[in-house]
Image (cartoon, rainbow, N blue to C red; front, side):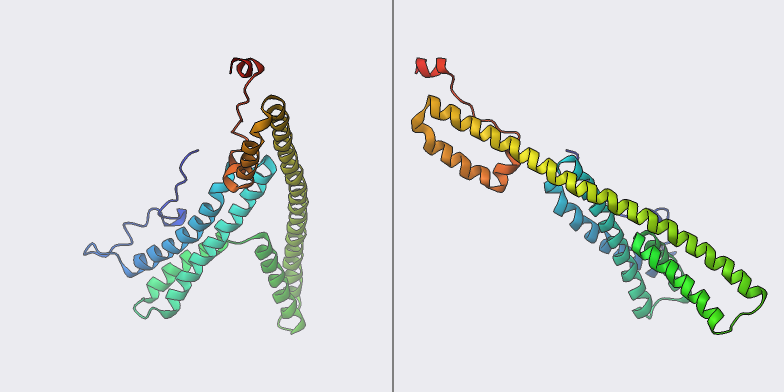
Length: 246
């Protein structure tokens, strides 16, 4: 299995080297803030990867698909954490100039956009509709402006409808995956149990006195290591010929 690598910079930071250093060659304040935010991103994403890497080899196809969905959500969460770190520095770091703050806010906005889930996008669209409705109910706009707002509102409502349909389709697909994953896991466990029963029958037939060793094997297979290696390991059972030779 290949070694997982995490880029030291998220995509939006590549190409920033020239602008991120002061004339004396030392990192600028903006670069320092961004570098720290990158560390937050790597820490959040790396934790998610390390938690799932050990399980990947034993996943069924449906479980792997569900795990990929979880990874995508974890990546979005990491981007949000990075954006929050940048915005906190904007609010608290008194050494930042207005230009520094503008650059950092642009990066934070890009990260927040990249980290948006479908639920976030849906909430944003509903918020836009509510703002338009408030303009009308508060009599802020009249006449032609109202018709323009109604057209914009209709556009947002269409986007809401499409997004809700996509979300329902995704949820339906994930429900099928969860059911498929349960069945795949049950089938795999049944295969393991069947193989174990076959081993037991062969051992009982050939070497009745070896049941204590079989019991030890069963205890091992109950452990995490035993389950992980169950599909790879096989018990070597002596043949009738070998038993006779002994």
